[in-house]
Length: 131
Image (cartoon, rainbow, N blue to C red; front, top):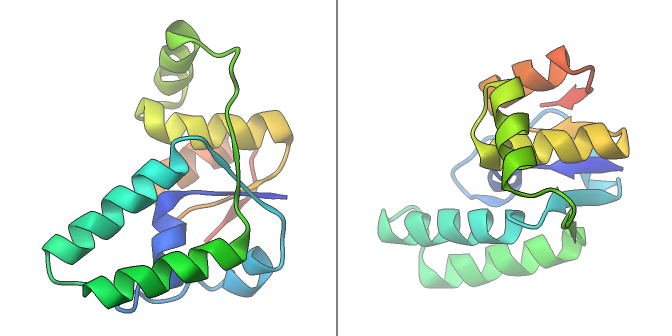
């Protein structure tokens, strides 16, 4: 199982991005993301459309490709605001990014990210990083 973040996801599907070197390993794995992942990816696609990186037809094609990956989302309901804050503070990340890292730590699995700050925090936490 691999936790997939938004930066890695976009590099897998955006037409103007370079594919990550570990993409074959990632697409063959069971993929997991925190509950915020669909919102983050949808927002990135919306911004890509607004900035001219994508046409509307491209967005639909990207969404279809994403659905093929079968990313499971996980909401850890027992983590409230305090715990989310503490995780972000402990890893020196935004609460959004810390959600990906905490999920990888809790599930004891690798993290696929191209975000250098998140990757560094993951390595400090003993999480394998796929980039």
